[in-house]
Amino acid sequence: MVICFLTDFGLQDDFVGTCHGVIARIAPDARVIDVTHGIPPTQVLQGALVLSSTLPYMPVGIHLAVVDPGVGGARRPLVIADRDGRMFVGPDNGLLLPAADRAGIVEVRELANPDYALETISRTFHGRDLFAPAAAHLANGVPLTELGPPLHPDALVRLDLPRPVFDEDRIDATMLYVDSFGNIALNLTRDDAEHAGVVPGSRVELELAGERYYAVMARTFADARPGDVILYEDSYRNMSVAINRGNAASMLHAGQGQPLRIRVLGPAAAMR
Image (tube, rainbow, N blue to C red):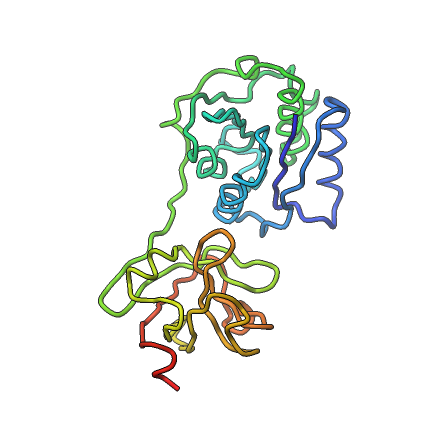
């Protein structure tokens, strides 16, 4: 059984390695795929988006996800099963649901059986003491029903996913995620952009925090000159903002959750 592991732990500390150790002690034959541990600290929405976006590329198995700013509080620990046979282990803070909803949820359990957790559960490291052991026991074939009482999917916490707003010659979008290259993913698909008249070659104006920047919608980075700001469809079919051979987030002083207004100006060739 494969365990796909995603967190905001980073790699400087021992957190990821310790969770690997816990899994290996309980389920030595399980294979662990580290999807990423670079989710910005406490950014549940970004973790949820990456978990959901990467899901089609992962084997069917157990998805252990921990971005948990409410650790030790009232939020519940969960395991969710979907129609494809995947199981999602993590906190009830919205992190798991965009991924679990892709195929449809068939069962939810609260992690409440101490037999499938470490003997001592800290107030601040449920990833090690609760979630990693549960994932490992599931990998060993322990039935979902053994882990705790059932919950109704409607009782789970859901994230408020921002939606783009369209008006005549503009789109009001939201910056969802900044990757390590400084590229900025938006809550906008290519279909959304084309519906608003933004197609490859279109020249647009980006307005962010009172500053304005010109950009071109491009199919690839090779379509733009070094230093050009581009709007493009990324590998997960979201529209993103980038600078060819540069860092868009740094230059635009951009971050997750900020609004971005896109104004359609016309074909790029006509603007030269």
